[in-house]
Image 1 (cartoon, rainbow, N blue to C red):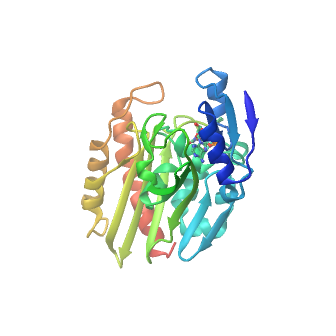
Image 2 (cartoon, rainbow, N blue to C red):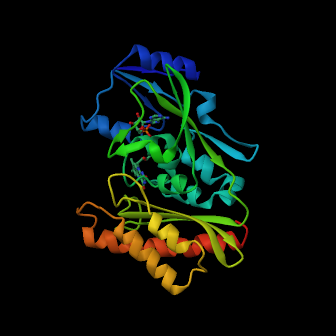
Length: 285
Ligand SMILES: Cc1cc2nc3c(=O)[nH]c(=O)nc-3n(C[C@H](O)[C@H](O)[C@H](O)COP(=O)(O)OP(=O)(O)OC[C@H]3O[C@@H](n4cnc5c(N)ncnc54)[C@H](O)[C@@H]3O)c2cc1C
């Protein structure tokens, strides 16, 4: 196996195009465990962390640009980013431990394709986009369209994510991400729920609800969004959000949680995340 560390996007594209068995990585916190168990055996490991564009976080013209290989801790320690996108920061801040967050990236979290990836639901709820590079140039797609199933993405073998584009939220918008794990720390979500709300006074004017770990990919819940819009988050609305979230679940049944448990918890977390998002929206988060 060969290790290479390109310093430009173009160089990385050429390496991938010339070496069909190659694999990009950032923190390698998913990749190395998978190689140890024999699940993956790349012929060439392409380290993305030497490419400046993939390691930078910037804010200009009403948009954050987050390098796909940037460590999660660079986001969680970024006060301006966290104030504007608390839900995404919450998701990034739940990935493993401090040590893991100092290595792990949003690009890796997304492209590993785990339904339980903690940073993904809030990115989808915020309408984040992924800029993808390959031999044919660059293209931009919604983060929601990247993962197609467990461990699978819509990227071709010679493509990788360069950066994420996350627009500044409209005025009076707040988001939140909550997850449930069976242990107190260092475990994978049995349910994750991200909600983003825009408020017009006490009334919800826009809503986005996304669940993780309850289906083969993160799922948006249009029925919960419809229930929220126009409401003031009264008890009936929150009950409808919970019912819609539970109905959107198609979870696995494993040692971490049964189908019934995941389905019920999804409703509870969606409700709670909606209440937090509304508070943040009203407080100008
Ligand atoms: C102890 C431990 C605890 C963990 N806890 C959590 C947790 O609580 N929540 C959670 O969500 N995850 C958790 N994880 C999983 C992992 O840390 C995260 O998914 C992390 O964000 C992966 O990022 P990475 O940069 O290390 O990815 P890597 O391992 O470098 O890459 C992962 C996959 O994505 C691909 N990839 C990486 N970057 C790109 C790119 N820019 N473009 C295209 N493909 C790319 C790689 O080829 C590989 O297939 C944990 C892992 C460990 C070891």
